[in-house]
Length: 511
Image 1 (cartoon, rainbow, N blue to C red):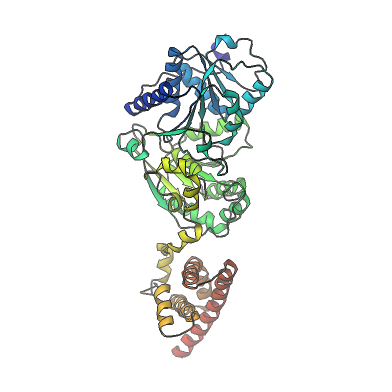
Image 2 (cartoon, rainbow, N blue to C red):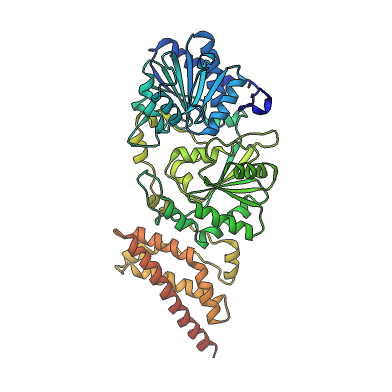
């Protein structure tokens, strides 16, 4: 067969690192000292070399056992990458994809690589003989699609491999399918020893109370599109990019196609090199866009879901999370796309526009994976919710806006302290907002020459107003979302009236 017809290129055999050899030995220790149908789960961070490790496991297993191996993945790209790596480890393997309707040559292979649904169909058709399969390796084992095949391999050793041993469905915890978890090296250790790049995270506070949670436990695409497509969030994203990633190769993750298209137009209109990619792109478009991204030093790629797994572009310098997620796995997958280390790349940036670092912790912080594996419900129930996260927001007026109020020496206003004073004096809580409105109005009047200018300037205080109302709401014992929204609108109306009153007083005093 000519080389051009080969479906999978041969991957050069990778050199195993010390921590990889140690984990492989630990896995074989379990294989040698447990039941033949033992279920073992192995965790290692993205970028730690999971495919290298289980390829060496397959090679060593086949050299010691007269049995076959099946490797399961959930995406066709991962099938090809896995087969390529196995070939590099001198493992003769065959991909079972949708094109394979018969397997007359299956006796020639000791290892099969397949997607879940494809393998399920071939087993139902009784095309593949699995009586002699001694080892089944499940890549990205946190996905629940693999469950439907476990019963087909009752006599096989099951090795699940994942960066995050937390099921994608809380109702189907991983500890129901795996007897034990082996935890590999930590992200911090891999960074310290030069295997992963170090991340610097920049978090921008984003109000997420408008987001809805769907039946899968994560934020819905529609509510995310509504929030992240609006002009305020688009400007915040563009500002964050210019401030922290200008000229760097940047990968932007969004929750909806509409948001990603808005991002594409926003950056394109600003004159930055950007392309958009989602799961509706055909293979040729995807290949061309990824080639452009690889070859363009300051390229920006805005995407939706498609690049979280099976995508490896080490030259990425900045990851922008232009979305919020409640999925710990997705959080690590997205940031992991920037963690590959190169000779000239030891660090990368993470720009967080979804309060994700506040929810899960920084990417390189230690995680008790054993606790999460054994008690996933407890872990998820104790994640910080959006309301709690937002109580710790502290608004800082951007420098360019602060310059517009340069005639005002002090623009600070401590809502909590003012509320304590009001309560101590037996005053109504609303006096806090009255004082705040008075200060904002004075700021607008003192820094403009015309009434219309002052009113226009007041509209730029929207973020400060939202922040003050949020702090004020926290001071009240009960405050619904609708009431908070009404307070914001009422505040803006009263601010407009107060600006008019102060301007009349200003003119009267000048006369």
